[in-house]
Length: 255
Image 1 (tube, rainbow, N blue to C red):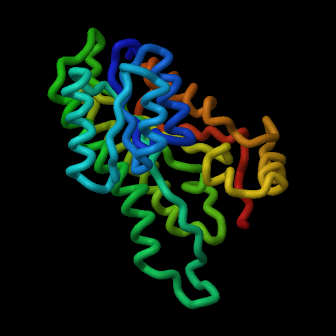
Image 2: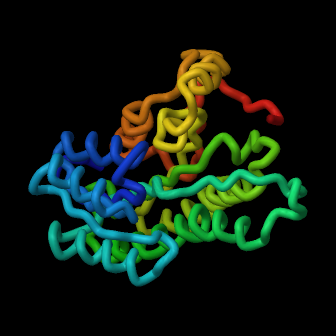
Image 3: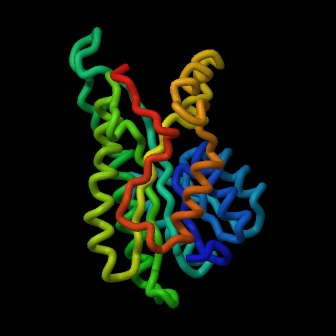
C-alpha cells in the first residue's frame, strides 16, 4: 500500500509515538485524522501538518467517538486505508501493595483503554475498510497496533500494563487470519524504552540510566524510529499477522 493520497487514523496521535507517526505519514503525502483526548495538542499538530490533517477528540474505548473519527476520515478524505493504534496508558502498581491489594478498577481501566480500546478501533476501522474496493493486489487496509515488550518481559508493578499489551499481541494473529479473506492486514509493534511524554517525566539521570540498559543502540528509542517502522509495515504487503519487537535487543529485568 502506498502512503501518498491514502487516509490514516492515528489514535494517541497528538504526542509521542503517535505524533511522530502522523508527521511522517503526512510528509509522505498521507491524509491524517489525529484521534486523541488532548484537544490542544491535537489541534496544534493539525495546524502544523496542514490541509490534509484533521483532529477528532476520542476516547478509544468509546464506540460513538471512534465511529465519529472514522466518519470524519470518510467524509473529509473519502476513505480509510490505515489505522495506527498508539493510544494507551500505564498505571504501575503491585498486586499486593503497601495499602493492600491493587484496586480492581485500576486494573480494569488499563485493560479497557489499552486492550478493549485497541480492539474497538480495529473492529470499527475494519468495517469501513471492508466497505471499500481493494487495490490491485486485493488489499483494502492495514491495521497497526502498539503493544510493548512488557507483553513478554513484564516487570514487578506492571500486571495491568503487561496483561493489556499481551492481549494486543494475542489477538493479532487470529484477526489477521480472519481478515485475510477481505484483504485487510494487521501487524503489532512491541516497542522497548522510547522517548515518550511518560518517559520525559523522569529525571534526566534516570532516562540516561534506562537508555544505557539497552544493548544496542545504548539509548532510548526515538519516536521517529517507531514511525519509520509503521511506514515499512504500510508499504510491505507481506508483513501481516506478526508482532515486531522494536527494542534494541533489550530484555527487561524483573524490576
